[in-house]
Length: 290
Image (tube, rainbow, N blue to C red; front, side, top):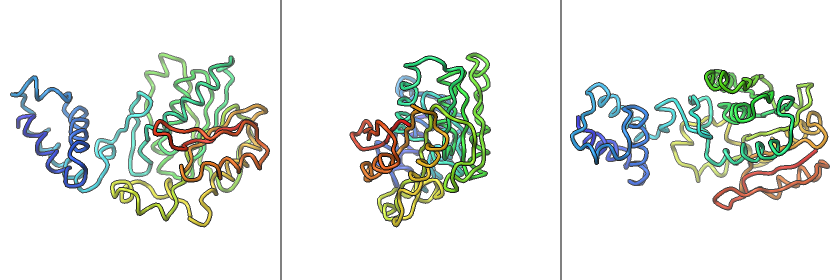
């Protein structure tokens, strides 16, 4: 099948659920992963033929995406901070906004010395994209990551960055099963605490696309309307128990609850509490110091 024909088939199928421009970008991204083509290949090589087996696999994948299954689950990987992470329906698909959380933590710590003795704790790690990114971007740091989901821990601990670790001397994170809401269960002290916990209120489900609502794990997404900040109060307990003096914490938040989330950490006695906006100028993170 001609690449042009395959692109048209994909866009036609996926446009039933997504705007045409977005559908086209999804087709280009899938074909780059599946076939190895670029978004301009069909233009500069109009006679480019896709092998029949790969074409049939692509058509089947487009049907899954048209039914609402996220492309990242179809291909099994998602991009984050310049790397590819394995993803399954047991974990959330990493979002570009969360890259800013990693960047803030990296900037805070690399402005000082001593990465070799740096200890980082990631609560509600999911795919492990935050834990792995911080470990790889700050070689020598010791990263511990926690989640309650066996499925998520299977994914996060199976991420394969062996080549980069061999090249840079970075350390693989340690993954531990624990319930963040049950209170601190570790004994080490940490220089940095990070978390992207569940924060979407049940009432916000009506605003979400079906590809998220029907396919991504609700355990990692939703909190009760009656107590939407439950994880942030738990994180305050972990920070009080495990964060070193002058240690830094940054958490991703619900944009509708920025000031309320910050107030939790002010009331808990932390210093330098800040609400940080994302690239869309929405309240996205709260940071503070012990």
